[in-house]
Length: 539
Image 1 (tube, helix red, strand yellow):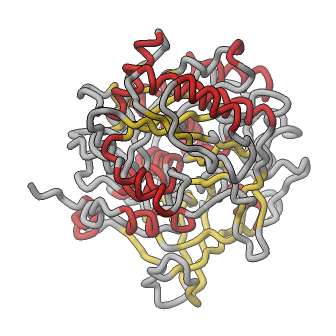
Image 2: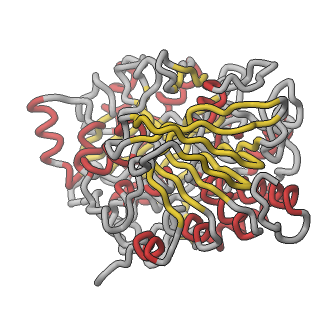
């Protein structure tokens, strides 16, 4: 069966797509709205704004990779489609961070799990961070809009054996579990979502809203890194970009300027604050980059009697919120899910070397993986991290691991081991440098008490980054207001997950889609009134 390349066909039909690697002279682009970043926030905004008649320019630092390029090869995907070649980490290297870097952003390489923002999170934002208009009832229409647009539905096929392990263990213990909604259409159930979908089944921005915007005469510029905004009074006057070569790293001696009536920052929760920091944007209360949150994640591997083949099938289809919101379990809750086990990804989570690693990898087909995502930002001790700039202007996230989080990690190890043994695991391994395989729940409890809970020993990662440009209606405690408008700059909006005041306690992509649709619709109404715009660039 031949899978059509949506972009190849669109470009042949006249889509306006430019590569920074191919520009042969200094170039100025003009638009009504310039959007920096093409992930969940930028892609969603582009389609909404373009359909209202605004001339939209999408700007992306990553490359353009499409179905013809996705060959289910981990090595190629991680180096070409992830930030810093999949080596991005916190400043002290204690937490690894997986973020996408391509046209379509992280939506191209995520595992398709879609949850609405939990109501306790929305209530917390309203009560503690002066966010208005975002109650569960007020957000429901926006979630419904994007769920329909991206075909978000509860996964209907039976879960693969990897996810069944989580389901069975929870059922045996009487713990909560549920089926995960996914943004897929005609999914082949291959399981390699994290390296780009070769069948166009994943309803990422790459195959949905970006093509939707380009069909409405939007333009796309990729391999162009947004370097800094230039200001005139209380407005952004223009954007300066750096053209990148096809290696995604080398800066070319080409100057790119972008002029627009309005600018939208959608670079994600590390890159968006970084652009504003590099630009020395107004920051009277020194909030930029602060309260940047991860879902710090730890894993366990359960070795089962029968083959699991966790590298095939929908990566995540079962979850548990048993330990998420129950204060009696401790102050920091966590969400339980499974993790796909493609070999390269799996090998990095066995914190072993030599013969020990070889032995564990030889049993990979029998392994069942569970992960626990810590819900950070809901107490005085949970302040998250801070985006800072290195000497070369590149961003890095400084992120401390609090005692509260270590307590949550310990409880997560216990919960996951208990569930895995309850599901029939013969032995369990903790992603910790001091861990070996334990053969019973009793052994697991004793082993966890002996684990050194300190950075570098515990393997911690995160695929979710939130905050850094906090929203709220009080300029003294937020960077943007409750619809994403910058408090000090009249023609700048921030539309991505960086506006979230805390982590959300669930996979964040659907939250970004919903808030982005709300913010972009507000912006379109502001720029156009109730009807469609008449295209007047820089009008």
